[in-house]
Image (cartoon, rainbow, N blue to C red):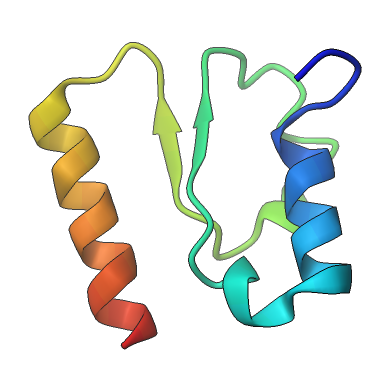
Amino acid sequence: MPGRDGLWVLRTLREQHPNLAGRFLLMTGNLADSDKAAVELEGVPILPKPFSLVRLREMLGGIMSNSA
């Protein structure tokens, strides 16, 4: 996503598709700036990179069961 990041995607979803924002999973290799966005990221599941396929499945399963 040249010029974009996960936080931009989350903001866009919240504005344009709020029903999808609750199904958002932030996957990141850089948590250095997370303090600056702590309020926006509250309640958003974060999956730090690198991650295993098992962990990704677990996180997605939790999101899907919470949004049903």
